[in-house]
Amino acid sequence: MKVPADKLLHLFKTHKNAVSGVYLFGDVVIKGKHFRSGDSLREEDLRFMVEKNYGEVEILYRDKIYSLLWEEFPGEFRKPYRTMDYISMDRHLETLQSISMQTRRKRNTLVVGDFYGYDSASGKRIIAATHGEMMDYKKWTSMRRSIDKDQHFSYRNSECAIILFVNMTPDADGNYVERFKKNMDLVAAMVTPKRDMNVIIAPDFIPTEDVVSVNDPGRLLDVYRETSARLIIIGESLSESYRDSLLKVKQYDKYVRIMVVPSIDTTNLNHFLSQVKLVYNSNRWEE
Image 1 (cartoon, one colour):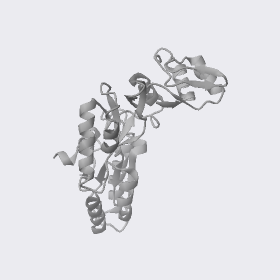
Image 2 (spheres, rainbow, N blue to C red):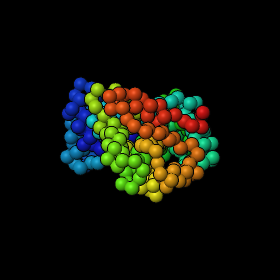
Image 3 (spheres, one colour):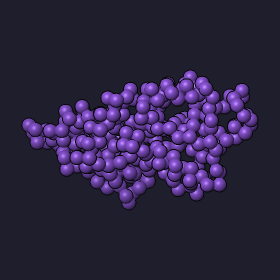
Image 4 (cartoon, helix red, strand yellow):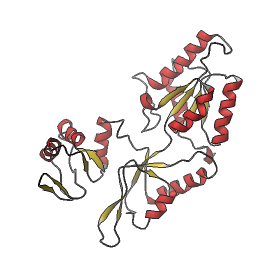
């Protein structure tokens, strides 16, 4: 897995007692200095790389090191949504292929870490799929013969964002000030949960980055496509134009996840977030 040298150095500085077993994947030569595949990198090695403006270091993926990366850099190195064995991953990707053939929304899997395999000629370990790579069943089947079937596969979903679809136009039905407050409560509950909130929507979900508000019904389908949103939350009863825009999304993706929230109980936000979590992590094709 490729990681910027300065970020690895940061881990050594901030987690001195936790960082161990950072192994180089492949040989590297920097300004005449040789580093060999399998070498354990030390803080001084990384300091040398940073001083020589060496960018990314390709290391052997390990869960422990990755957990420190997402702890320090959560936006760039997100937690895995789930980890599976070989059989489970095979079934998962086959299911997504089947679902993608039934709708215009194409659902894929994002590789977390690296997927490893072996070269049939040399017997050496190779990288079959790299961190952040989009994986589908076709690509998976093309590399199944070389892949290391004993490893566990960490992944994220290509769908991640949550759209808050709220009607904020002054000419809509009902009192505008009252509707504005309801919708602001909804946005605040999703983006800035209180410290005593203990509901995690999904391991790789980051509220401040993955929550998108849509007020213009003409933009809903475009935003659903652009953000690869996983869930649409409807803030209240909607006008005809808003209902038409939802229908267009349903025609585009018959498995779209939609949740209706007429109002928020600000005294019990844990209950609301638990319901969001339930719908967010559900798969309509399994119903």
